[in-house]
Image 1 (cartoon, rainbow, N blue to C red):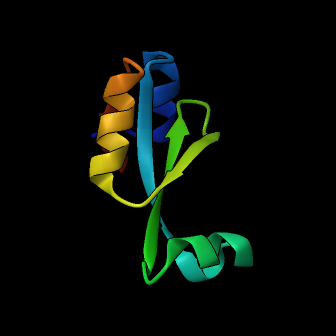
Image 2: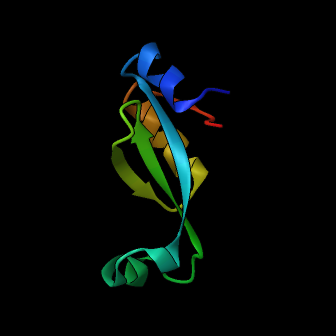
Length: 74
């Protein structure tokens, strides 16, 4: 597991997930989320959100498609 500071040193091909409560998102995003209570924000090593996905599996697939490694952040 890595800290956010560790990720910045490791490089640009790493992304991490952050669970986000759907209720905390804008109304239009909530409408698209359906009955999901949690979505997953995908962040790059600079902490910028690069995607918002419905599941960890989708995040893993997208990371692999873009030659990125998905890591656990603690």
